[in-house]
Amino acid sequence: KRIAVLASGSGSNLQAIMDAIERRDITNAEVAVVISDRKNAYALERARQKSIPVKHQSSKNYQSREEYDRDLVTYLTEQQIDLVVLAGFMRLMTPHFVAAYPNRILNIHPSLLPAFPGAHSVRDALAYGVKVAGCTVHFVDEGMDTGPIILQEAVPVYDSDTEESLHERIHELEHRLYPRAIELWVQDKIKIEGRRCFIND
Ligand code: GRF
Image (cartoon, rainbow, N blue to C red; front, side):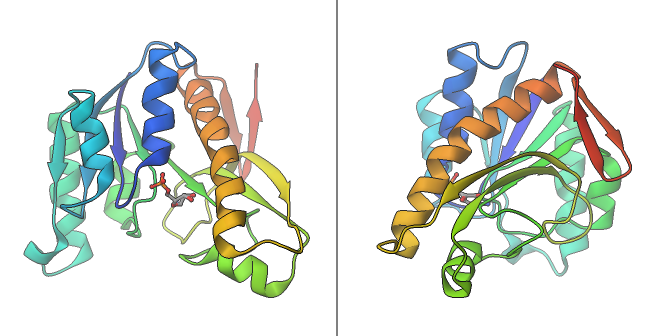
């Protein structure tokens, strides 16, 4: 399977995915391209280091989210992409994009959804005072962090935690969970019924 990873930031999840493919924890799949809306995203550098093609698609050249996503879908279709993996891609996907890849777009989010969707979930969780945080891998639909949940795991929140220390604990979890979810998808082991995903492992 040909995977496109979309990332706006540091790309530590991308790194975990590339490493998992090298270790053969993910089989029969390759990262075919890494795409970013930010030219200086370190994710692009990580891809270059592995000789994976990269593409920078800036939102500055587009009038609307729809136009941006149309070009993206055209490109992904040309590249014969089977699975789209969002790894810190800070854009909401439009209905056109979601319809082009039904049950073929994954996202990872640093909270136990449906708690704390959005861009500041770790900060929001700390501010709320929760004692358990975590991360969620889910299919992407048109909403913000709302699609069917594939995998979800928890970590404790300590009194001494800052946003950084908690996010670091969640990141470690993400780096294990995302490759696992991708392998399950690639092996066609995820069955979706309504909002519920069942794993046939
Ligand atoms: C992760 O915490 C992910 O859950 C969120 O954005 C962050 C991306 O981190 N969607 P990285 O760029 O993979 O290091």
